[in-house]
Image (cartoon, helix red, strand yellow):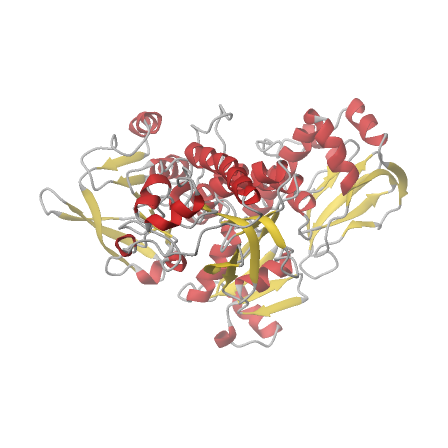
Length: 593
């Protein structure tokens, strides 16, 4: 597959000799396993052996991956930009290797071309055959899954895939970069302001700077300032299915809570659709490492946790659509209809709200020009590689800030952790505090907040103030990572159900207390634990008032919500298939922004 393990400028080795090549970096992702003879034999029982001649294209860049290939003899080259002036050899696979990365499993298009270099034989399986086999063989399935996830991470880190050309000062450039980064799409940003390649590409495609940002792929596809949806369709992210059938469950949001709900609902036979406005994973998807996630003793990145959950939900038949932004929720004829920003709709018997919350933007003088270029709201491999070894600062005192500081310390020469409060104990787990206090490149500054950002083309420094003394000082940093308070994504729900004073969704007894008494009397029952003031609509995870803002808690609530969905469906079935209650607004006191 795709993923160049060599140092820049070094020749790409033949995979058959990979173990002896001294300039290769360690395969820390498990991206290049060699299948054992027994594993290959098990695959061969379900696949078909075929001859492969030199020059045969097995997978073509820009097309969906429909077959799984194992190299039995000969070799297969993995090439980016095959047949173009910018062609780049990424890897050569020999016997025992298989071809494919994450796009193979989630039906995205390929970001590379797999072409036979030395003639031989390959083993081919359809995707249905592969899914059936790995479902029954967990060891083999984990080998394939881990490799595909690792290869995607390597592709992202290499800057393979499509190119985004645009100014760091352009809001649309920042929008496209955020969408690509959050969805873990292999791409490379070419800065219109500083990168000489940008001018050459504009001349080549006869495009003026005023028409940027551009998305260029394979030197053949050019999109001028595309919407997120247009970019998603180019890459093969799944749209909403056509038509508007009445499914069992619509889940709005795909963070840990929404994905856990999708896995449990789909595995129990509910017709399940998941919609997401920006990217699967929510805030957890931006975490560089989660060390207290149940079942992962060595920790797991938010991106890998998300990708595993997406694949698991898809295995059971859940449909996930990105980007699809919800705009309105209403009740129609005993069903719930969610209208989206593009005026499409989905109707379902029940709804689970899992829209989460978004970190607040940094509101200090001088910050706005650096948004998306030097000021970030996630700390992934992509941002870390952009910063290199330059000193950086992290703002926040919670787990996300602590995880980011430790991750970035593996790259940056110095990481300042800026905390408004007197200590970390109130909002950060003890294991993170201990690691931060021991790390030689993390310097914690308590009672400290940012008062100004300054620089030229990029951030040069931030001014911080000591909240006890009022003293100001400048920190020479090249990037700022912000993990402060979050706001719930509930503006579209303000006229549909009860929210608390901060905009979070009320559930259970609190939601019932804010409703008119006739609403639940007509139901003949009390409001269920995760149910909102609108019977049949549930809220889970960070968007729910009073929830514990932790990944494990969100996963638990998402899974538990399906129990209550079944109970609600049971109630409506017992009453003749429809909810007996009138559509009644909650008490006015609940409608506080």
